[in-house]
Amino acid sequence: MKRHSFSFTLTAEQQAQLQKLLHEGNYRPLHLPYTRAAAAGPDCTIALYLSGKCLIQGSGAADWVTYVLEPEILREVRLGYEAVLHPEASAPHMGVDESGKGDFFGPLVIAAAYVDPALAKAFEALNVRDSKRVTSDRVAEQLALDIRRLLGNRYSLVVIGPRAYNRLYARLRNVNRILAWGHARAIENLLAAVPDCPRALSDQFGPKRQIEQALLQQGRRLQLEQRPRAESDPAVAAASLLARAGFLRALRELQEKYGCAIPKGASAQVQAAARQLVDKQGPQVLLDAAKCHFRTADAVLAQLHLNRGALGPEGAAVSRPTLRGRHETGALRTEG
Image (cartoon, rainbow, N blue to C red; front, side, top):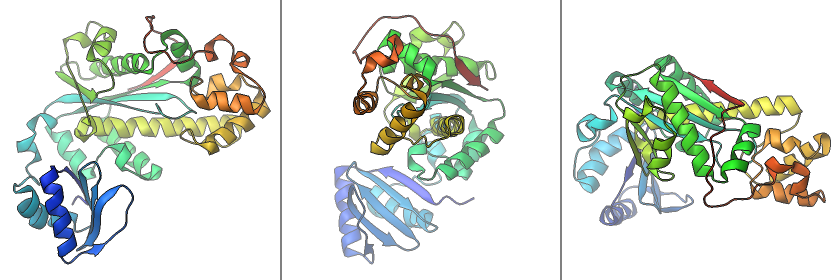
């Protein structure tokens, strides 16, 4: 299956060369948000973002990378040589990622996915990529379904529902501590299926020791690695899609349970939905439907002439940088 989407991070010099090429060549300029330059080429679009990332998409994307970007801008051959340039990406390891961290409603979902050379090749054929690069929920869920079929039992999913999340936050007062606990549990669960897995990789969200301290005896023999933009790794990308699909499924379950819209994010639309929910069910429903330390909770309660006292101790917690605490173990759902 031919890939239709490619992403490269360019140096400042490469960005300047690409801007010149798109301006002077036979390209049709496009106006896209957050880009330095964007254009339509032969059966593809090229977008150079302010971050330095170059995204090429379309049926002609592979040819444009091969015959234009590599020889004229990168000055090296990468396409088709990913396994040579980054052999660790296809070596046996697991990737861990999460979804729902920035969403008021719904759980925090952490997934771990295993990769070996055969799976890495299959993921590449499916165009498995960071879920943030998949704009359609439907496409993300279909990719997650395909990934689960390929992996069988070689993945795990930890779902920290709102009630458990709020208890954890009331005790730990730190999102990174909750993430570290969830990452550690996902790793441990997956090790039951792939006990010889030598390495685990995740995005960098806090001190690595937080995950290491949360791991049990079996997990502590792993080589644990964190790095920025780890979603470029096939195992982490697969985990990001599995976590997103799990989060979307949980939102649908909440919507069915309460009979009203449960939107993603923390926007004005989310506030309106939360007000409607509290009007119907009372303020403590937020403990079962939302992450109550968000400022969104304060805004919603204030609009209804209430304050955090209406939520009780578990919803009264405010963010603090550090707080020692024990790990919560109840009211979690795991899969895999």
